Image 1 (cartoon, rainbow, N blue to C red):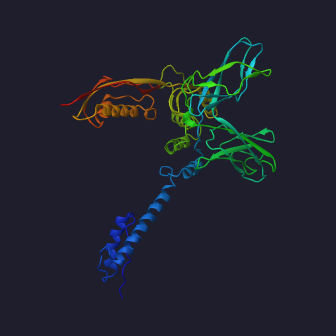
Image 2: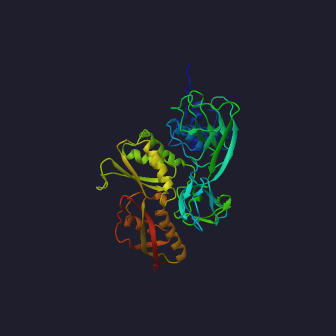
Image 3: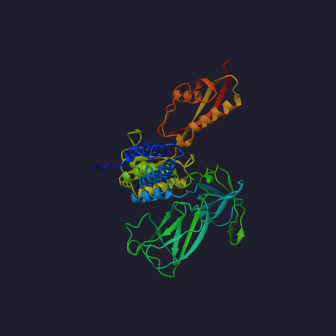
Length: 472
């Protein structure tokens, strides 16, 4: 008695063409009666259908396996869950921050207090962009101006009722909740936000804000053992800001309107407002690429700032910070031992606001060694002028070539592509312009040589002068 070995397909053949080819090749091993391999044959039709279904199943199996790993996951919810396993949480949308300067038309007798939460807005936008003061501003007698930190956003309040059950969760009504702006009050008592309940006791009034794959924010409480429970029937008041993210990164002198007048003794004052510095740091919810890069580095730091890599990972994980560079006495001889200087660039570029630097300093203080003196500094942007002659092929449209070259240079010097101290090489610029469609060759006049940048510097595109000549 003889037995026929079962036909097996190589497991690496997962697409339709390979599966179909392997199946047809194995037909003679199963029977010698099937000799018609034309597309019209009923057996071939069924075989094609099977190969198509197998192709789809293989795709979904591969996709499912890919969602189990941080480098390959594509679904945001899966990325959130994977990062949660290593105690890293993707941040939601980040509100821009700035300084507001209030100016009184005339000095008044007594101090003028502009309360925290005063709303100002930029009015020359299609939709007004509101900013809210963070703390009270007191303008003393005889003074007419004062400055205070402000954060972009529109304030909302949600009301919930406690159930007394473990793991209570409540969905916030509005989307685009600004990172770090949620305040929770239960029965007149303010509760404290935490990243996790691992160190919370049964009496600790802690809560956590989670974001899901649809960018919806959730208020979460503990189980009564790790984190206290909101009692049954008690009112849970949740206030927060919603933000427009990067659209809040405004140039100076754009925030000029006070929708609500400032009152002193019930009498409105004539007050003007403006932002003397740009609003910066506004950002969309954390991207998948950023999470894949920063989350493992943050885990390696064990959430403590010891090495330079630890400082950089922690700073770049902080919402609102796009780039960071850490300097010590090995980089600059003027720095003392146990002194660290962190240079940060906010999301979208520009200069970090005083509020962002203060918040980051507080964040680092809880994680650095007690002997370390850490300072946070602003980046220096160095414009790189480009002057070049582009030689074009005949019949090329010069205006089109110039637009392409400008677009290529703009992309090359985009803020997202730059790193602190990254040199600019003339060979790269020549290759970039030479690769523009329609360009035969390039003569670069400026920069005449490679540009070396200091550690605190970021390159930006300076004045561009392009001369176009047609090759005959």
